[in-house]
Image (tube, rainbow, N blue to C red; front, side, top):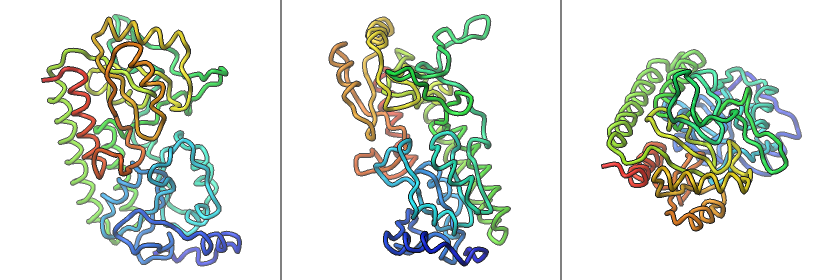
Length: 333
């Protein structure tokens, strides 16, 4: 669809020619380069953003994801090929704070429509604990400083220490969907009516998912669950749970010995049965902790990408699998 920038640099063109461009959307022909189609061309930073673009755009969009299935989004480095994708696209959809190289590339690109999902809902600070209960002063009883440190004392934070994992809360994700829909309407007004209809349908699906979580977790034996990294803070807060993460917001940071001991004691005191790990990050620490504490292990998928190992083919299916895993771990009836 893009006709505003017919000329790209020789370096970028060579990169595109040599490497090819993979596409995510079934709405477009395989191998078609972003910006060279007759559709509204959207480059999305990673799966949760690409899913929104596809669901809202429908047949009118061609979606290309910068993060490939099975790739850890936090580790993404932008290539020359991907820079060319951005240069030739009609819109870029990302979540500022999750992938710094993506933020920089989109900021420097000439793409006209830049959509930052972080501006479409409210973000909060989460440390290794999230959710839980507040005391009479409104302070979280378990809260730390909202910053996670690795073994070298380096902080892994996002802007203001904010947690970017908003897509794991169906309500916040729906808020983002509404904002993306409005941005698509403005950028591609010829198809605005379809974008409105598709957005409403997606918000309805996410509202139904929210109700499933609310009712499915209503009657449970414990509120506490343990994860490898602090991805589920928004979900925990939404449904009155407490997430205790082995590491902080950075999935690669190693926990201290004191943190491991604290989690073992907490698991016994709070009736925790399961340590959750995820498919894109090593399960070694989770299984070691579980083995030492006599706990089970299971997958709680942060939905940063869909692979053959995922428990479902799309966002909704994997979230429903997450709900089942939480129900089992928390003793929900």
